[in-house]
Length: 251
Image 1: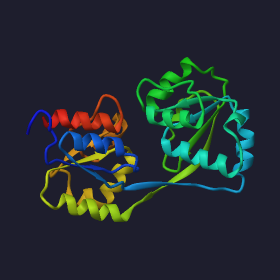
Image 2: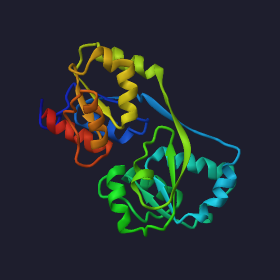
Image 3: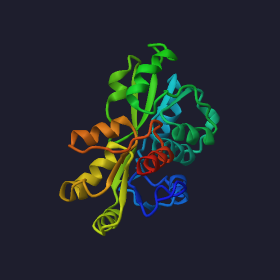
Image 4: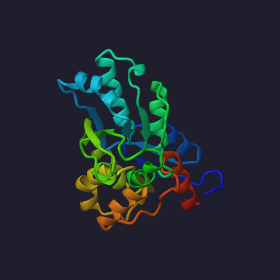
């Protein structure tokens, strides 16, 4: 293994929602073999009162987004109901640089982003910029925890804009790879990806035949709750940073 190719012959399996192209290219540049095999996908939840909710959302002081999936679902609702971004005169809070970037691409400005990209840090730092009486609309997925709703003193309404589903074809693809005897690392991006992997592969195969990588302490702690140790976790919670951390660990 050379210093320029610390991931030589390492098959790096990305199990999160398929937004891993940049991390895949980085993996290849470091000598590894990227495997894009998301275990989960997100699907917008469409409801008959979506337009009314959009039109009434200006009553809130803040919009809160914690994932790119929530941004994408929100955008689909805007397009379907023929509204413009300029209609929404609110402040924007985003958890994570990718979430913030997705919002900025739509034309929003980011008014707050926590120093660490996780909901538990968000609820500690948000009071620094938002008065307790300022109301919030939290755009969430169907599997989102109550961390933000229960953790903020602000009045928070939830809008479940997308759902998470398991991709069975990729489950079989990853199972074959892990049983092939090749050097493998599996990247978990959220408790949802951990659960999908654990139920379909992990609880039968175990976790000793590959390197376990986690993005974020929430994901790492969820793995720990299942008795699984994450060998690699980056300080900055992004896919590219987990590749750099894995390369350092392997090197």
